[in-house]
Image (spheres, rainbow, N blue to C red):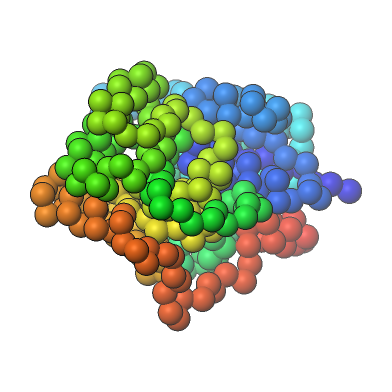
Length: 346
C-alpha cells in the first residue's frame, strides 16, 4: 500500500524542484506538497497536490513577535492538514517554509527527514535538526551538519537527451536560478561587448533573465549584432543545458547537480549576498569533482577577468572531463533513505 509523504519546500525553485524530482523518482508512494505562495505557479503548471501555509524568516529585531505569529499560524495549518491526511513521513527541503510543517510533524510524532541542499547548513535546517536525526546532505562535507547526517546527494530530473553535435558556433547558456539573475542582465552583455569582433560572430547567447528585463536585454544584444534568445523562464531548461557549449551560472545546489549531469564546461559566479556565503561554498565543492572556473562578481568586469572568460569560452578543447579520483561515495539516495525510514519500526 502506498505511503503518504509530505514534502515541505518553498521560497524558490531551488527548494521546490528537488522535491518534485524526488516525487517523480518514487512511483511507489503518494506525495503532497507544503509550500508558500511564491512557488505556487510551479506546482500549478505541473498539476501537483499542494497546500499553502504561512511562515516567516526569524530575525532578532522589533518585529520578532510578528515573525513568530506567522510561524505559529503555519504550525496550526500544518497540524490540521496532517490530522486530515495522516502522512507517514514529512520531508523538509530547507528554507523557512519548512519550519512550521516540521514542528507540526514533531508534535504529532510523524517521521521526519530534513534535506540540506547547500554546502553549509541553513539557519532553518540548523534549528530543525534538533527535532530529528534523519538529516540528508547534498554535499559530502557540509558545514555545520551533525555527525549523524547521511550523504545522499540531491534529487534531479532524469536526463534522457542525446549529446549535441559539435559546430563552429559557440552556444552560451546563461542562467541565474529559477528567478533569473538581475545583475547578469547588465554584467554579461558588458563582458561580451569586450570580446574580439571575430569571436562575437561565433556566439549564440541563450539567457534567462528576471521578469521585466527581457525586451531591454534583447535590445542590447541586437545592438551588438549578436544572435540571442532571451526568456524569463525556460520550461525546457534541460534542452538548453544539453545544447550549450558553455554555461554561465549562479551556484544553487540543484542547478549545479543538473549541470554536472550534462557534463558541460561551466563559469560559476556565486551570488555575493547568499546566506552564509553558501553559493561560494557550493561552487568550491562542485570544483572538487568538475572542471570549471569560479569568478567573483565584484571583479568580473576587470579587463584581466574578461580575458579569462573569453579564453575559456573559445578554447578549442573546451570539453568536460571529470576530475580523477572523484568517484561519488553516495550509497543511499534520498528516495532509498525515505523507504528505509518508512520501513523502520517506531
